[in-house]
Image (cartoon, rainbow, N blue to C red):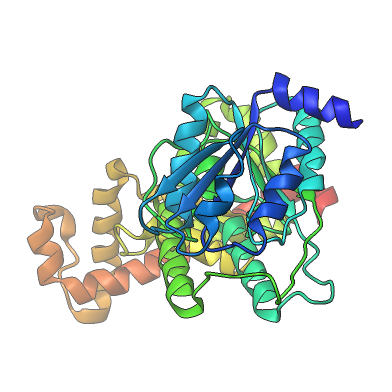
Length: 390
């Protein structure tokens, strides 16, 4: 894209540039001047700076400046900027850090990627984390973040921590729960949960220890990020994956579901059979309330098919629970000298509580037996209809 094409695209697509800043007096002027070469649709959020930032900003009457009275964190600054951008009628916001690590001349990269996508998309700058001068702790933190983002969304990215991004303002969540550095994780995960594509675009990066001022507090902020990821993973396992599965299942006929999600899903026939077997085992096990968490976690651990395992675990749907409990009590009776004539008694919680060991042993027998049967039957079925996957 030519220089004028970039400027026109920024204007026509209602793109602004957000610059959150806190005590970056050494680099702030350079960043603003660089962005001004492409657009004056700039919103600077001064997050309670105590250096000469306020004086520097008085030099720029052509841009929008928000001065917050006290420092409340980058996440709070970005949220403030997003609200202001939408009030001013912008549809997209490119965020660029004010510490000098980002190059304003990469703005055309985001603009071109947005135009090429022809859809609402959240773009994250992909820094070359293997280049000389990149702190090892930054490289490790990025890999760590990439893994959890993939686990929580199923999207594989090479860089999830870069602050150089393009946000679709009307597609990101309206409310957030984190105020500091972890905000940038929360927003991309929750936007992905809204079925908005999240993608990387290549950018340059500069780490200059003489100029760059980082406000990242390794212990405190890493702890906050870890707590956030724990919450996001829990929501993923207990709500997002089941929600997505149910929605996808509703959109397909049973025949199409079998064809696309079973026969043509990733993995060999053996992997698919093991996935079904795992789901059935968990479904018949007495871990009520934790079936989804267990089946998805174990599927990830053993690299099995999460969808198939989740589907199979639903053998314990409410209508089947009384039959499963009765079968478990019956099978466990011979091992503890318990009551085997279950059908003659009222099946309730008291019966299970009074025969807990009998129930646990019987559940283990039932789960193992049904798991083996279902796994073998699935493998034979898939081997017959789709032998090429062996």
